[in-house]
Structure formats: structure tokens, C-alpha cells
Amino acid sequence: MKKAFRFGVVVRGSTSRAAWIALAQRIEELGYSSLFVPDVLGTHLATIPALVMAAAVTTKLRVGSFVFVNDYRNPALLARDIASLDCLSDGRVELGLGAGNWPRDFQQLGIPFDSAGVRVSRFMEGFSIIKQFFSGETVNYAGKYYTITDLRPIPHVVQQPHPPIMIGSGGRRMLTFAAREADIIMPVAMPGEDIAEKISWIREAAGERFEHLEFSQNAFGIELTDGPVPAEPLIPGGIPVEPRLMTTQQAVAYLQEQRERFGFSCIQIQERQIENFVPVLAQLNGK
Image 1 (cartoon, rainbow, N blue to C red):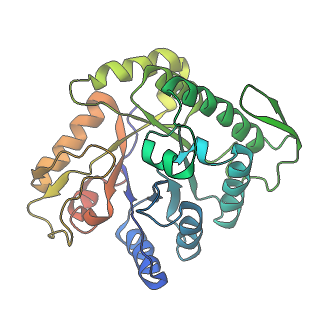
Image 2 (tube, rainbow, N blue to C red):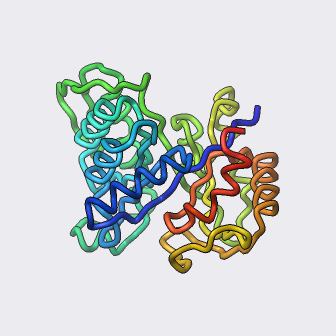
């Protein structure tokens, strides 16, 4: 069953309170469903304070992480922060989680950048703690990397059983885990990789859950040649960006084709695209 399109904006943020408020309110006004803040050092506002402010000055806009890096925080404390944000936003949080893939950030924080296998194993333990916190039952966990004892999960999340959880990855192990545990999945394919194969991994692991999963894709490189000109030039970030000039109808057809083939319905764009992308929203949002 095809899911309706919705669109989110990944923002770098602003050092000005007024500019940040204006940006969050403009994103909501234009009809985007979500505002996401990356968990990257040196280029963005701190994720949680920025999301708290964005939620406080909007009424319908969902707020989320793109994505929280497991190794930067104790997962129990992150769960408490997210539960608090879900409570204070009246249930408008989307929780993006990942194992982290930027060695420089780890180096700056003095955190060992372990092998992908170790980071993923630690992520899975952290994820289990977060899910247990959201369950409302006392958290007890004893693993290889984390130990949590008699933690009372306060506050309780508004969204039940928990805020939607998004996991993005290109690796089979993470995608298999996401298929069984996440609500939103962003399968990432590097040049030369087959996205259809990654979807097949998810389908195999998800079983009956597959039809309920929401699939996410970024459209960071799409620029409409018949839309408002973006105020800023295309600046590729950590996620690979392929510049793609399209008319509105070409972009609409492309996104419809991607949904038909792979199920992508949750689309993210960059902050610089918010005005340029409005003609696509007008045709696809909620449909």
C-alpha cells in the first residue's frame, strides 16, 4: 500500500533567535511536515535546544533529529530528553538514530572511532535501552557496553508506543535491524550500489511489518528550474549530493516513480530548497 507523500526540511540553523523562529514558522507555513536538525559538530545549532525552540514557536510542525549519533550520549539520557521533548511538543517528535559515520567528530570529542561492527553493536544496545525507556516500565539493562539499573522512565512519551523512529543506513546489518525495529527507514546507496537490493534486505527481515514501514529519501540535489531561485548555492554536506536540475513536472514524475518502485514517500530537502520546492509540495503533499 502506497503511503502519502510528506516532506521534511533538514536545516543548518541560525545563531540568531529571531532568524531561527522565522525559519521554523516559515517551514510550517509552507506545508512541510517536519524540521530536522543534524547531529554534526561545528556546522549546526545543538540539536535538542534547536528542536525545543522550533516546537515552541510552531503548532503542527514535527521536529526531529537527522540523526542522533549513539556514541555521543548515554542512551538513557537521550531517551529522557526525547520523552521530555515529546511531552513539551504535544507529541510532535520524530527520532532519528544512527551509529555515527564521521571520524572527525569522534576525534574532536575524544571518543574512539571503533570499527563499524563495534559501533553498530553498541548502537543496538543503546536502541534497546531507549525502547525500554519509552515502554514506561523500569529500565534495567546489562550488556557489553551499557548497564542501566532501576531507572524510572519519567516523563512518559505522548506518542504511543513511542515517537516514530527513523534509521538510515546502507549496510545490511543495520537495515535488517531497522526492518525489525524502526518505523521509518532511509536506505542509503552509494555510487555503484543497488537500492533495490537494499529494499529486498528490508523486506526479507521485516516480514509482516514491511507494509507498515515508511521509506525516506533525500532530494537534496533537486533544483527546480521553473521555481523560485534558491538564495544560497548548492553546498554538498555529509550526505552525497548529486545536483539535478528539473522542471516541476520532471521532479513530480521522478518522485512518483521512486515511490512506485521503492516506496519512498517521506522526502527530505535542504534548508536552501524550501522556497524552490514549493511547486512540488503543491502537487504531491499528502497525496
